[in-house]
Amino acid sequence: MLVGVAVAAAAALVPGSAAMASPDRGDSAAQRVDDRPDEQNEARRALVEEGVATVLRGEAKPVAKGRGRSVEVAPGQWAQYGLQSTDSILTFLIEFGDQVDPRFPAAGAGPVHNAIPQPDRAVDNTTYWVDDFDREHFQDMFFGPGESMSSLYREMSSGRYTVKGDTSEWVTVPWNSASYGQTESQADMTRFIQDGASAWYEHQKSIGTSEAQIAAYLAEFDQWDRYDHDRDGVFTEPDGYIDHFQAVHAGEGEEAGAPESTIWSHRWSVGQRSGGGPEWNRNGGVQIGQTGFWIRDYTTEPENGGLGVFAHEFGHDLGLPDLYDTSGGENGTGFWTLMSSGSWLGHGQDSIGTTPDHMGAWEKLQLGWLDHATVAHDEEATVVLGPSAHATKKQQALVVTLPKDANGRDRFYIAENRQYVGYDATLRTGPYNFGWPLSRPDWVEHFPYQDGLLVSYWNTAVSNNNTRTHPGTGRVLPVDARPAALRWSDDTVARNRIQSFDATFGVEPTDPISLHRETSAGMTTLDVPVRAPVPVFDDSDPNRYYDAANPMGSVKVAGAGVTLRVVQSNRTGKMTVEVNG
Image (cartoon, rainbow, N blue to C red):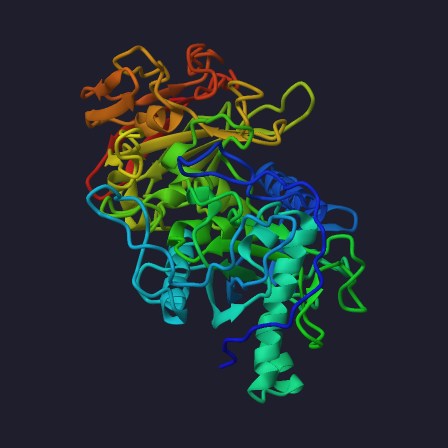
């Protein structure tokens, strides 16, 4: 096993440009983009989305290519259709050196790992902490038999997909955290990945590992042609790049409240326009020593990151976008999906972000992991759904194809049966509210999201979920069965990840919730009593689920005359839904 600790030789400082925007799925700052700009990745994502839509419309069928399946979206343009494999993830644990970047002289050296203070549980029930963030900790989080990346992705894919891999011991880069994290520019992040790769490589050489042994080891992590470099529609072949690379950095992440000099968790690519890469596939990136293997696409997360942040960033690595509002607003996706605030869920104990819920049905559809029925908007049907968490003898979801809009863009409803099953059990225990920002800023109270039929509107005319800039519309937004805005006792409209707690349709009344919000004027409360079931989704009025008092959290639907009626739901999680009945 090629693991070890080393201090890399000092590298020349490469000045960087202004920092890119970065993400927040917690409460420390505004929501920002953690899926950084990358033209190739965005083009690949668009091809996959178009491929899925053409299959749903019945205009194309996936064909076998190599060990996978692909859809020809246009002549010579192939989209990978579905991930059905066990992929390998290579992870380097990287701590920071004692060289202080002269651009940021106030920042100190490091940090090194295991320097995060133990939180005081009397006032902090959110910070994730263990006494030793060693290699074994991460191996267990990523690939262990309990709650882990491998078990989460196996469950979300209904057994079609999982991960394996290896994690290095901690290696040390020359510069302090601020040198890479203050700007997080393309140049500085390229240095970070290069310095980390060099530190790992130099250690392997120092302990006597030969070039051939290192290359053979790395070859296990190059089995996927992410961008179909030879345009043959075969994605299950090497391309000279590490398939999935994680750079875990020492210290906390900026997204969790750490200083601006730290790195904010994200997915990106390095050396985008450098002209580097294997001779037969020059696609940028940085080389690992002289091995001939390159890193381009990567994710980076903090030492004390919970399973949620790693699973969320890995979702980006597979091609999924952020579904929260990245423009600084807050839409209705809330805790409903791993690709929004669902990455911050847990068991409601002493930390958040340790156990995420599932990604939504739309995301599973993009990855080829959704068992679903398809019904046209003007057809009648009765569909029995099983829980969306895992495939059963029943379908996980219902897709309703809608008339194209005036510009010929596709639209769909996707209805899934969310139940407290598997990782989705955290929908009952994990949603939280920071109710004491003045006196106990690291303390949360928990409340349950309601199980039932979650109906989402997929509108391909919209490229993101930034309802701050286009109120009531988004790429894929959950429709709130109870759209009237909830208000605190001082008449302030509640944030949308609270509004969405009872978004589901069904035949059971909701659970009551009681929340707190500390302000400079005193404590305010939000008390929502038991509310009657809402069994029917009816889109005949496009504004039925839109509330002008909460434009970022409500949805303007298609107005195609579609009704979805939950007829019954039993204790085993099966749900009967009538379409246009």
